[in-house]
Length: 222
Image (tube, rainbow, N blue to C red; front, side, top):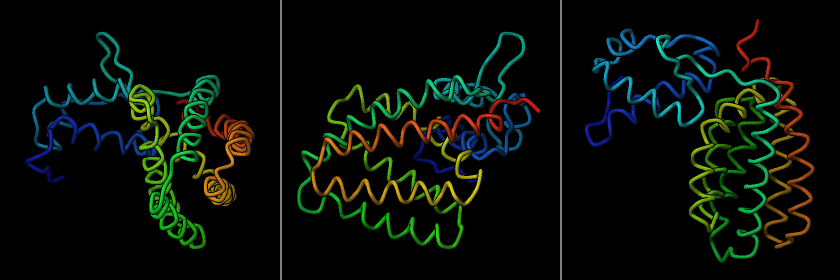
């Protein structure tokens, strides 16, 4: 892997390892071998350790005394608690956006919906996932509260991990996610905050159930 000189090295390492964890290339409960990673990436072991601390804060890695770092496992209870919080925050962001959007604020969302539709039609999980994550990142800009914004950014890697596990469960999950985002955008245009709240509440419950059923893949249990 080639690192850019102007990026912080530990952040680059964290993103590299985080992507492997999110997409299931590194399995829950798997021990992370610092020396192997340092040799593979041609970086110091200290830089790898700092990157692992970043991933610990992002809920992707657990670090134990004398045992080292392992890929974090997520059970159904953790998934439920996570989605309870995440959809509460998302409801706040969508409410702010519905009341405040102007002129071309929604243009990029329309572009992303076209890309999501194309990825869904082609059954392109990776493309659908990447456009979906960008859709979320765009929404987060309208948090209008730095603490909510910081929390959403801190939770983003865990959000990505759960989203990838759900989408990987089958084509129907891509269909459901696309239809929700399409309806969401229409409701944002109408500035219908009451309907938005109900949509997020209903979809949040259903998506949490889907995520819990996908939690086996994230639990580290055979």
